[in-house]
Length: 457
Length: 168
Image 1: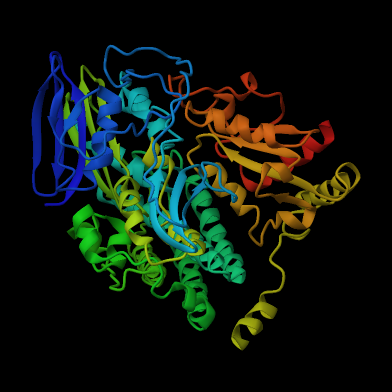
Image 2: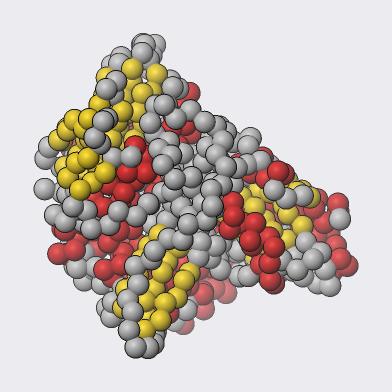
């Protein structure tokens, strides 16, 4: 079984621990008097962050876990505060005395540690990486995040689905459309409305545009991190073209607020020729960079993620597909009818992820041409009231499988949970480091291009 | 590779000029001369993300693409606060990030300024005050200039830099 998520809810007189696998969902009651349960982290290593987070959020203790450190609550976070409990209603918190965090470190003769972050040298999000080094060789790396922890889950509680949308679309800017589509699926189920096909196609088109922007940006940056700056100029030029197209279609460069229940008129002829032109440029870019041996010297065999680790950790998205796992949420009739073809690579290195992104851009452009429809469209029936209940949604964002679960009670959100694909994938990153030199870390990290904001919430 | 150079010559310069956007061009000229006068040719910016959604960072990265090419105006993003004149702050100042952002600010040699980027540091984004958020930024720093938007577009960021330079 593949672990998708593990999270908790507070009920009237007990905690409910929910573990979502690809084949089943398990629910377990935990008493409030003795909030203890068994860890599954030995069997499912990516359960570790979920469990550490649940401990911070609710104070539930996982017996038998090999790591009980705080995850979300950092050095100056007040101890014994569990913000996801319903009894916690404070709007401000004061800094507590500094308590050092114990990093995973390898010790030995000549072994030393390198700390990187949270603020990095480039224009990127904050996060911390802790390396144990033997000279240039990386022996171990610990990924430590949650610097961007904004308390989104708590913030959404008590709001209606429609009030929470502005927050949900700003969880991770690079995946805004994917988050909005997850929100849409939940709203559709909760209000029992039938989504017209043209509307669904339009939303899928925007999702593919978002994927194209993200992949093109990465294709520039990965090569740049491999020391080939000219590719960044090309990649970022193409990404800007797509961003401007997104702005033209949705009046926002990141598509904030784009997923609504009405579809505007679409100039299909113009979009057709635009996408064909872009495809030519992408093909040129691919052919050109495929011919630069020094780039491939950096990419090949660097940062290998094995298929075995993918299975063990339940890795999703680009990282999984580059390691030979044919797994994509879009592998369903609707997307397949509109040109979706799953692409995989087998070597699991930076080169595999780089090539996979090119293949996915080309597939997305093909899908865009198949998904476009000219006439505007809107819901014929008004949106009815939201039915109370538990709803979940899966969307393939540009990073991978996004999972969202919402419980609605009395018309407002009782519990909002979302698991960004990065939350799983960050945890496997350390397995890709041994055997590589520290100078290749930025390259490996960029080739995965995981989200910090979506991970930290 | 030879085909790349042929394509390169055919494409010419992409950076948006008068024909594409006259206003931007006028702005760039003004910006260049102001920077020359006030900062001996170059303005160095340390970008610090205190808990954004990454859209503001993406737009700052877009400033280096061939359409905007910010560096030719003498404005660059630097790798260390110790090289910087200005801290460009995005995000909602999360509980976990606030001490680190303050540390970075301390490391900037005086005279120094803070520019806030996007709606988050001013608490104008849809995020609500929460236990995990320490914004607005004014409670922690003297903010000289604010660039509004969610996220501000690259052109708005360039205009924001100009307005900042007019202020000081």
